[in-house]
Structure formats: structure tokens, C-alpha cells
Image: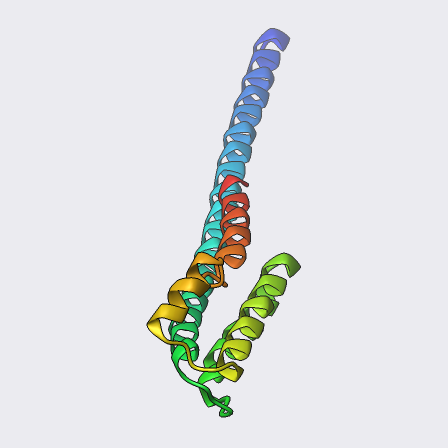
Length: 149
């Protein structure tokens, strides 16, 4: 028959192995969970960055066009409105608010008179050539926040 000491040693050894295995399993689970969380955050940041970039490209194109053309037709603005609608799904209210200001500036530019090159120079000197500045700033803050989390 076995001695009580050897049984105790075997039980303690098995308990140690179980605790070690459980610790290893828990560490692996936490590592995978952190990796998945980071991947989700990275993908969310990439989606926002893509939408913001698309909005900036389209808004810049339309603003440039609006400065030289009066227009009542809104068909060119549809893509920009669609980008704002996509932002409403994922972006914070500050970003959406600034995007709507950009839309307003573009509509106002289309409704206004055509500008000559000399007039555009004066508009630029008065700070009216950068309707995307505040939008870009809030986007940068938002993307930085997503990158830091």
C-alpha cells in the first residue's frame, strides 16, 4: 500500500499542474481578447479615416467648383450628403456638426456669384477658402482618441 505522504505529494503535484494550466489558459485567453479588441478598434479607426478622407476629397472638389459656378442643381452634392449620412452611423456629433457646416459653406458658395481669380485671392486672405479646417481638426482629434485607446 501507498503511504499517505506519497498520496499527498501526488495530490499536491496534480493541484499545482491544474493551477499552472489554468493560469496559462487564462493568460492566453486574456491575450487573445486584447488582440481582438485592438483589431476592432483599429478597424473602426480605419473606417472613420476612410470616410473622413472621402468627405474631404469630395468637399474640396465641390467647393472649388462652387467658387466658379452658380448652380441650382443639387445632384453634385448627393455624394457629399451620402458621406455625411455614413458618418452619422459611426462618428461623434462634433464631427457631424462640422461636416454639416462644410455642406452649408458649399451650398452658399454655389448660390453666390462666380468669383474671379482676383476675388478668390481676397476671399483666401479673409480666411474664406478653408471651409474644411474645423472639420479636419475635429477628425484629427477623434482619430487620435481612437488610436490612443
